[in-house]
Amino acid sequence: MNPETMVQAFKACASPPVIYLRLNEEINHPDSSLGRVGKIIGEDASLSARLLRLVNSSFYGFPQRIGTINEAVFLVGSRQVRDLALVTTLKSSFGSIPRDLIDTESFWLHSLACGAAAKLIAQSMGKQDVERYFLLGVMHDIGRIVMFNMEPIRSEAILRRARSEARSLTDLEHEVFGFTHAQVGRALTEQWRLPVFLNEVVRYHHSPERASSFPEETAIVHTADILAHAVQLGASGESILPALHRPSWERLMIPTAGIERLMRSIHEETTAMAWLSSATEIGA
Amino acid sequence: MAKVPIEMVQEGWKVIAEVRDPSGRVLMNSGTTITLRQKESLMQYGVLVIDVQESDAAGDGTANAGDEERFQTAARTLEPLFVHADRSWDVVAAIHTAAVRMQMDRSPAEGSAQ
Image (cartoon, rainbow over all chains, first blue to last red; front, side, top):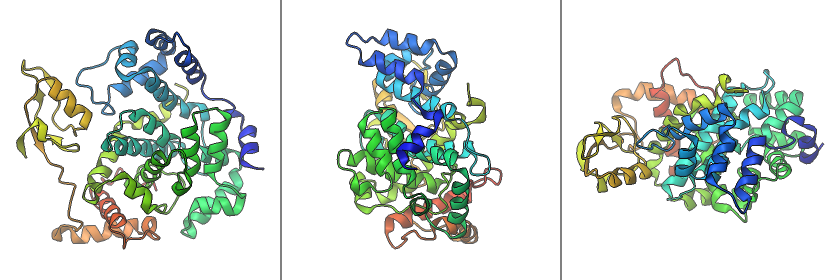
């Protein structure tokens, strides 16, 4: 089996969530309108509620309450709302991870922490489209869910080895499967026809030096992943802190004196959004 | 803590009293950690000065002497996570120190999920 065949065999992820496809189609239509984007979201009461909760959270910190989806689309932007819709529907699309391997909520909590970290780093760099970085961070380990579901026995074995031998799970994936979760994630984003920046970031978040088209985005998510591990919210399956790539860190211009402040902000934002990874949201 | 002109406020500082616009409407609650976008919004709403506390998190990389034992206990808890981390690099050392301090702050109920 290779990353492509593994993704093709995992029926749960044959295509992206329908709502994402519909929003994408509307946004890319020459006569696209914010009103129609709002209408598509409004047809899904659960998604509407989750999106409103998110835009009214500390993620944006808008001074006034946003009461309707149309208001949210107008203030946040249609592409940004589409990205947030994908984040809020991902967990229910993938279902649960085999119980013996890793706690599903814990996995998504780490993904959220990485999303929050990527968003905060992007903000500190003056980036405007923070939802894009949030989405990148949340999706960085998506290939691992496919591996856990398709190869539960071998995955359990390498998770145990990673803990007992204090080794990188990514290295063990390569040793045992011949490929890593990053390659499986790349195969998934290709199958879903997601934007190329997502493809490259997911593929190279553990080897940012190989990113050629989107090195900055990749550096942000690479660093965000390490900080997310360090704040210890959730679990990716890694037992040891992944190695930080020095040129990627230097590219972000984060002052060393600001690291603790940044990590505490990651903790705060992730905790405030933890409901996104909670069991009650499955299938909601 | 201090009253600080809005232009001087930096991202990550914490608001320690409600922020109101000139008409008295509450714009931000006490305890909010300010982002650049929020700062710009407050300026647009005509806010001139706010009560903030500069984050006390940005430290000098050393634990408080009185907390030395707690620091060492937290560091031992985190040792498996950082076992291969290159702590001779000041950036990784700062990440480690921050993680240890956050571990010290963690309530027993929250625990570690790593």
